[in-house]
Image (cartoon, rainbow, N blue to C red; front, side, top):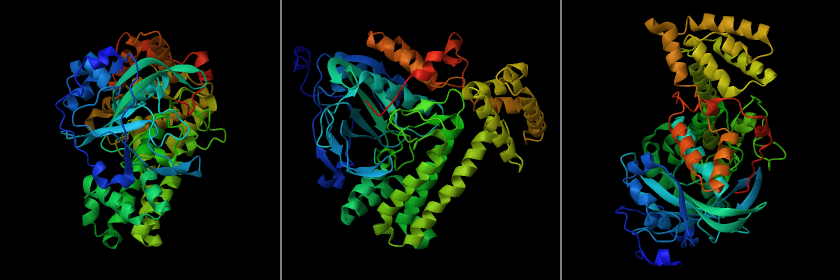
Length: 502
């Protein structure tokens, strides 16, 4: 350990009333493990608004002691570091035991928004690292930091990111990179894979303990339901199905590709979790595959809704020993099939500025998506320009995006006619524009924007990361001076390859 680490206290007291609800489940669920120090850490980025929400002084996070602590070099007073065990299906194949191979849970904070767990990702080897090194690299840590905050800014359920620290310690991936640690925040990091783990091993006592804990902490209404003959575990499966359906509908509406929807990357709380090879669409291509490692296209953009249901089916199988009735389990999963299309249509209507639902809306939505795909129109720019057109800008700004002008003009005519009956009250077109401008972001975290910020960061210039964080937290605002970040991606952006390597 270097001199700077030795110069500070053995533990850093942040005044955090850390709790350890997950640890109380018992030793079958985790292994206690200490983070492994990194030499000469430095601060890459800090999420000051989130720090404030957690009761942390952002100035402390930027101090030398804070940087050491959130790199894993100094124990935080009251923490109880552990790595959890889980299993899962990866790319549709049962992978057996997995676990937190480079993530270490520090504890849980009580906050006005409910309990929030703090986790260091990239903090060294754990018993579940398998063939890995337990590290994360600067590139992937910046992507996760910005990606999770971009989703939060868009109003999509997600884990959060508090800070990123770096070190010049070498880490081997496809090439030698440098190490980093991202501090993640979530009410819980429990995944579908946690349930699969204990069910596959026929450890039904532990399975019940985990399910009861999740119900009691996050889904207490499942205890009171009269549905499913009062079966709280079936009610849990239904609640998770509905939350997952709503989340994936939001993904599809904003053009987000997760890239690696393994069951161990699915949150039991319906949160977007594990930002690896994710991407926001540029040109609209329903079959777009963002993960360079996904050679079969299992996790293509247009396959995400069905994959989510497949993952929920796996969760249902894992919970079946508790539900005990296969028909009840299948009935609990059925809600996904109604909630997802309903939520997606509601999101797409909002993108069109429609405040009510009409039978013809589905055809209106489907026809513009087909036209966007036919001309490979930039997804985010189209929706923002359409919003600005309804707010008063010329239609040419929208028409210029298309080669199929006649088809677009026909669609615009039908859309404007429908907009006139959109249940908007006296506000009319102004109300529609207001709804659209707070639904269709001007800024999303495009791959090339993240890549440029990463290139700067590798040169120890973190201003690009901070700029993107500011945009991520308010993606619907105009942000004068940053218009270039809302423009078309450069040609080289299509050649960026993102994979599971991090």
